Image 1 (cartoon, rainbow over the protein chains, first blue to last red):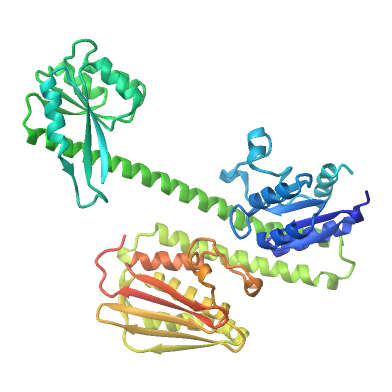
Image 2 (image 1 turned 90 degrees about the horizontal axis):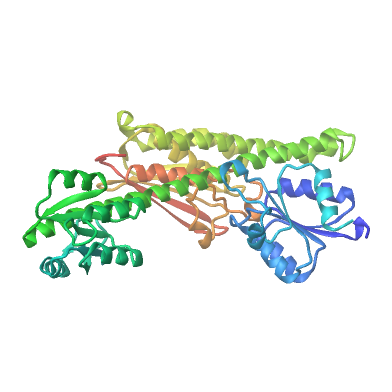
Length: 131
Length: 378
């Protein structure tokens, strides 16, 4: 599959992070659907199926990202999901996807801290899509 | 109405039924409690039976005789202590030797009820125990809630602090790697957005300083007569350059003298926040009206704008820390999400109230009432 055949859904309420992510991913050749809220993402998920999704954790509510993971996995179990956040682990908001128990309640395939380099993000995407 | 479970372990049936009878109709109430306490008494004739009961269901209070047929009272106490059970224990005993008393106290008994006791003696002991139990539980709950709030605040704060840095870093990398082109003009949006994020970060830092100030500083020595008209005038002067830029006119209507006893810095925080919000969330050509008035006991401040307004569901969370109303209209307005939570905290410090009425697209009106006479602030 070519990158230009792959559609990625990106949901983030930080307009700058969204702009940059979209800019970088488009440059790499992906097709992007970008939305700024959990609500918009839900509308989009109901209408169309992306090949991969990247969700910000905190949008309208503190757990918007978790909810989106859950909803997209229920509708499209095979769509890989990346959860991205700027909440740091040092403050105790610690979760990872390392144990089965955590995978059970966080329905994401990858958990990434924001600020990772675009090439790193590209690699994670390719791994998840087995490109 | 709350019920406390009392277990009485005594080998004398007369004592057990006496306790049941006296406490069955007894209730404890204090003005500071949110509810009355009544008691549910369960009886055990031996230490072994008592422990069997404890293992089934933890009582709140244990009345414990020391002299028992098998296992002794102090041994029951020891059993409870080793398992860290949360039970308040009072010994009921006829000949407490100093030895037993010391050992029992060391192992956590908090009271001694001499045998035989009058109903009044038993009741006053139970009343004391209930009071202690209540205070202990309230303290515990408040500590838990306090911890939770601080913890949430920190994790959200770290998010708010890191988000603008991530944005700036991303834009700078974009420029460093010349991802959007070779000319500086190709980066007009990233540069404009970076400046906005820096502005947002600065206002967050300023608000955080206000936030820590109102939390940490003792105010008593700074409290003085403050004329709210003067504070309002200062706030208007401060916001003026921004108001001109936004094409918003700011008006002050001082209907009567409003003087409160307060720390002038606190009042400045309140007015600066409300007046700058009235400009910030306004429309081109809009108005911001500040009205100062007073009743017999209160100073009244009304800050009204002709701005974008707030929907009913959004007003509910308006005063919560880090809550920013996000929609099309607020997209390009920077803010920390702390301003109104600070305003509310300050006003509550002075036993005042703040309320908001708003109509989307027409504007918002904030009304503050502060008592003129201050008894105490904490």
